[in-house]
Image 1 (cartoon, helix red, strand yellow):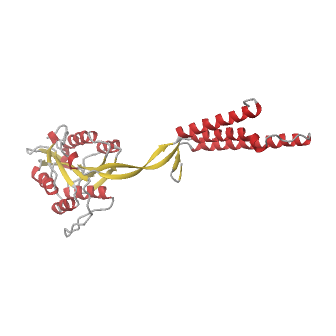
Image 2 (cartoon, rainbow, N blue to C red):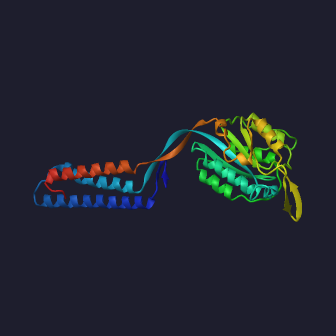
Image 3 (cartoon, rainbow, N blue to C red):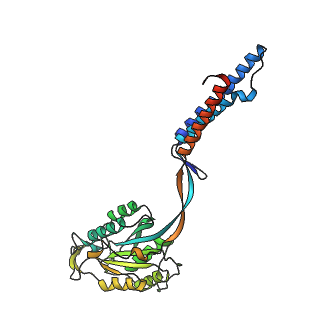
Length: 321
């Protein structure tokens, strides 16, 4: 539950605490009134006035603060951090089922992608886009790298290949708005995103259009694209809908994409390292709201109030209760 910039992890404990504190306060008021009435009927003046109940008030306040502390309160505070964004574009087309990379190209790409994710610092937000003829963001860029790893593991082979879609789909994940090249090849202006990098894991087989235009969109936006070639130039045969198709690694296509955007081409055998990619990410300063636990401070305040209440009670009456 949240109230403004404050949150509590256990609303039920908070509700119980408020009820208990309210009941104690009500009982203290009723007891004080009865005592005052009894003394007045006996002709005895009530000693101390309101100060006589200061100890009880502090004690009840301490119980109330302690009740709030047990509910797990936290304040949402803005925290600045330097961060960059990397989107992994994973080719899931039918040709990625070829076995010239063991056990197949997609599995090899997944292995390399997981190694890359695990090597990145928390300051880098990582997202995952699966592409064939279309593209789908399966994990939005986030500092929680476990979500990216789960998205990589869920990938399955299907469909044809469009490397242009891989690029525009990744740019969509980066910018948070739909990016597409028009049918006539007109490229959109998406602004400048130098803190973002795209890493394409693919065999380079391309059946789509507007690849050069899509790469130019990324280049103008300052987004570097690194490509990872999966498979062999000798190729292998893959069965699709009962047909046997020969497919091989198209290194020239992947190299062209990388060079156009200032990135680099990496053979799959070296993809686990992908040295130098982190150096191309221009980290930016961002501010995000993060929870600051308040339970410790509130417990300290509650103990101070309880101790103060006990001290006033002892000084006034000579007894703790």
